[in-house]
Length: 307
Image 1 (spheres, rainbow, N blue to C red):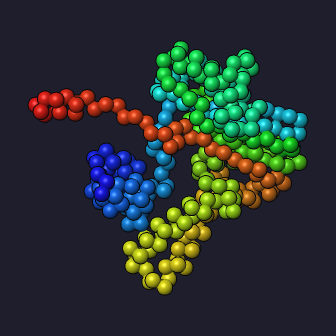
Image 2 (image 1 turned 30 degrees about the vertical axis):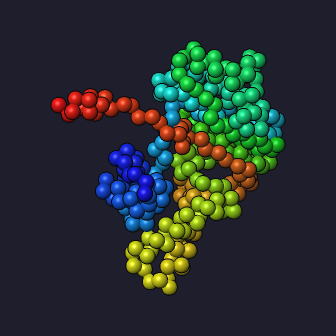
């Protein structure tokens, strides 16, 4: 039996929004497994964790870069991490993020290829970051990157919570293929990128949706239906309907467009005579645990016996 610590309970409470005692019970019931405990809370109707953004965070910047190539375009997005938010406002760090994004335009998008490539100044990206660490005094890393290219059409970018042009906390790329006017497609792609920043879809189409994500949702919904006392012979049908709704909520092409909820993204793009080749959304620090500041008051209390 894994130890259920106060820190684990606190983490689950912040992630789920459920009560402290419910979080403790969820962790006990699931042997301290955070993911299973989150699902347990959801199945009991005690959590809306699936609707919440990942609370884990790291500091730094997400940067985007675009390049036109006649009838086509290329776009790249990268994440450059640092230890504190203060560094994200540093001119040297911002310049470095822009350089890395520009480098990513010339790669296949693989982050290792980006780290090994050279900037316009002739400096290898990994060396540039190492030198920046020595200059600023914080640990840094090029963590993620992505790139899209279309022969005909547009690649659009959007940065949310921008701290400077092309730099911010969330970066989105949307690649549209089509024979239409590139400037028109560029504007359409930017609107869809804003939509993606807001809704954070899991996949482009239902076919692309991770089967494991669907099965996990099905298991949660099935357990929840049982908890609600639904008739056993109706549960499968009820859950099938809820899974269809789930897919409409998390698949980009099926989502209602935030600027016109009466129209799906699929219909919006078809109306423009284009298709979405792909999209990517990088949120700063997703999945990275951020170290908590030491609780000096508690430390002093423990050393003095609480006096």
